[in-house]
Picture 1 (cartoon, rainbow, N blue to C red):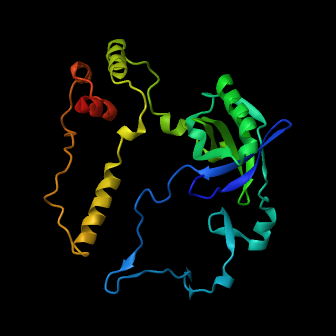
Picture 2: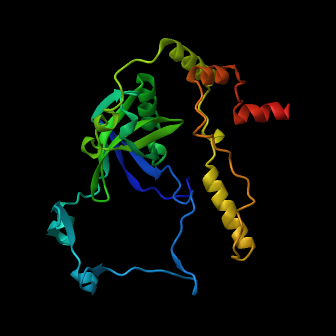
Picture 3: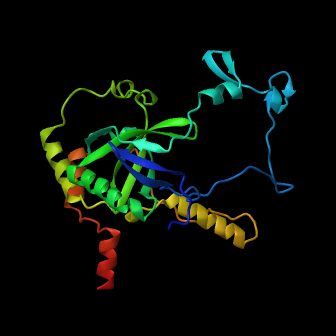
Length: 279
């Protein structure tokens, strides 16, 4: 059993079939260092007061939530009014529609969760749904009421289990047209396209997330470790090596750059390099 507690327990329903399942967060909340603002002379964390312009600090019981419907004009809502429209957490997630596995634009995907059977009695039905989705190459869609909100979700096979991903609703996304309107409506040069396509083919490999590292987070953790070791003393970073950056003024011929990249050797992935070293 996982060390973490499920964020939701309920029934995954397909037509008249209901399966007891549990939902777990798939991402780590503490994967990246987080910071608080500290008062340096005392070493204590800084707190913030609720203040109003021209009035100063105010009591908590004087604060309401406000929706700005026009610039500077707000409609005020009490906690009771907001709580009255919150949805109760439902114990059933019904798959109401199915779409092709590649039909949903990645722009819609928000946050991933692992879905697993809640007990041994649910195993057989869970496996049937998982394998049916995999065989049909489909994703199940439904809506999940959780923590007072209603989420649009997609369910698809993931290894031995299922992956549930929350999706953005359409009105949460910005249209791309304003950002792409200045891009000329023309096709790429045929010769350049051929070389660029060949370069992409040469560098194509199976996806392995372990190959890619967050160098900033690694350097940040190393800095924190060194600060702890030095008991908080300031550390000079002037002598630390920095990655070389290309000179923006060095404008090169596009075809020449593509051909040069194509002629260069393909870098092995981390796993391939490790196997080569081991042999």
